Image (cartoon, rainbow, N blue to C red; front, side, top):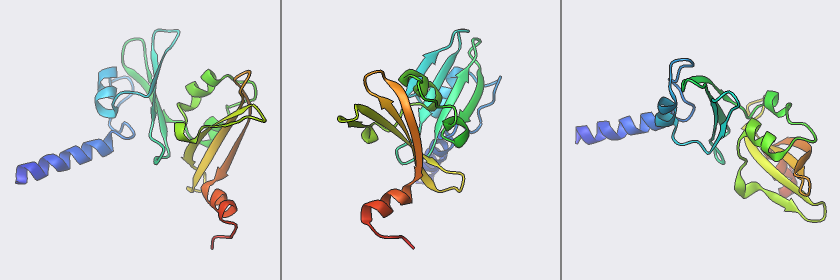
Length: 169
């Protein structure tokens, strides 16, 4: 019984550690190390230099998407969270959907909305804002050109206040 309990505890600890790639070291960890610890990426891109970029979204309940860069030699060169104000500031009007995906990773599919009258497609991510509050970041695309029209961010509580029609204390 102790062996089973120890095994279950080890699995739980390992699964928590793999969430953000804790323990991976740039220049040392390999692609196999990354996928063993973090799992299969949701998206993968080939880089012009022969390296790769991997996206690990942790939503919809989580607040992070981690991007891992694998150098041409097969070793990890960087791992960083991208759902933050610094990265959001890089999303500009006129960017393509592919460019947004390479910056932020995939949005939460269930939150994708199409507004027919505006011919507008909205992708949404959940993140922790600078005040450590749950928030949402939206990228609004012209659906015909598939290019960014604008972006917006807002705290989740605002959405509920407007929806419920009352102020939260």
